[in-house]
Image (cartoon, rainbow, N blue to C red; front, side):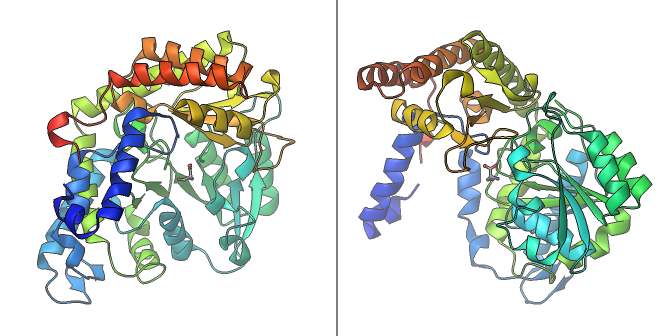
Length: 417
Ligand code: DSN
């Protein structure tokens, strides 16, 4: 791969090599990341890149779209089969634009929407004040119960009945436990609201049937395709047949234009892979690794938000260690363990500092790391937390981290990009 770029743009080629080297030698634990299969990179750069098309199969705005039609139909069929969904739309460019597609399909300016607070584990596009959606719609936030650190379903129900939203949005980007979709669907029905579940983070675990699916409960299910689903950087939406027409209009022309057919091709491959036994085994290991990490971090004196993890996310409260999320993130990065600082519920720190970190187990599980390696990673994290500014300790941890990850190549030697 990149044999032409190496000649035509050595400077850029060098940066790609540098990034490959970084990924190869670091322990990547950003919860929204996965490692792209070689096929995903091949397909993301395939000839579909050159084709412009808008609209839907059989009703395009550009000629020459017959092959694109077949490809999109194949992908839609695979997505529907994988998730048991009545309708699929693979055109969104990302999880965020998937959410915009649903909003465009069902909301009018000023409509009310209930979404989980960003600082309690929701997402910017669920009503975050910095996101431009909040200028158009009347977002009302719900959050977590202070004691359990689980979704406060009573508050959600009360808000739904008092504020009568048109749409309830469930799901988030830093929620480590299962969500009771049946309960939220019941609340939505009783309040006359539609339900959208954003399963961006957990789409792979759902596909592998390792955790419960929101699809039977929700009117719309949105997702990015790059997190636990381990696909390309893109998005998708599933919905009930009754909403199919409105949804498709909400995506195109409602919120997006021409399709990224090359990325769509990679999604089509991803759906086939996500139906395989190998993928299921990886997803099972993702959850086992998260649970092992919870156990080990707790043993080392960290406090885990929500009392544990049912998915790929471990959200850690660092206050018992008397360090901030930023300091811990930066110290771990130096050591070669990549995580991100993250607000914890009712956090007193600023978003740029935070009292927590979010750790994800998808990419390390893809590389083959299992519980024994998680024990070693947790121990490294504990050593770093105890001396985050001691260069000698960090250097020793860095050496140990490199030894640990060296046994788990990122790509087989014969197909390294
Ligand atoms: N929402 C961001 C995250 O979860 O990291 C990006 O996808």
